[in-house]
Length: 265
Image (tube, rainbow, N blue to C red):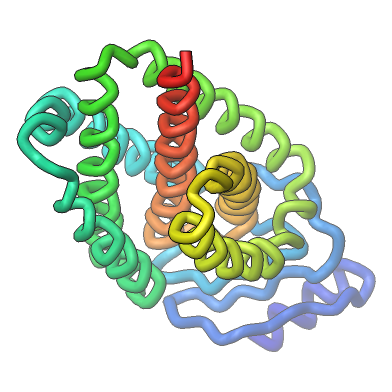
């Protein structure tokens, strides 16, 4: 490790390096400075991440992320088709009380696990409850004839995803510098939203847009991190986990906004 640092210091004009403990099979030192625009999965400057498991090639890393995302959204689509109507007509929505605890459990499992298979299990623990929530909302909107709103929410999510991907690719250093700020804002916004929902529900609509903007920024951060962090299968699954959650949450919030706007007409 020390030899690696010394060699790179000589090759890069004695710039400083950030070191950290490696939990996997690879030790990594990532240059600290203004982030350059990285290729997908390359070790981007300005951001360091522990590598869990063995390193993989760029192509395998990217395909793992795409494959996980495709799997998650396919599962959600099938849940909407097969369960949406029955969830909307045969349930009162009380089952949604289980969604948040399962999502929290999956986040902790993903964060603290070190193996790719465990992270993939955590990913599915997120996909299924999120899919139930999406299927329920889509089913309700289908029952009241608001499928056009579902289509618009889907288009809006795709547009936001595409824009944030382009921005993250062009300026990854901007999003990577926002990590701590986004975390603080998120922790502050959640209790604030709960209080407003209880004591001032008429003003809660503003939080829909706030959370969309917040999670759009999280999406930019997570895409930037996916491009900048060292490449391994476990890191690829973690990146897919984060990007999936951002997109699914944005879609749900857009659904709520579309439903509210349609109900006013």
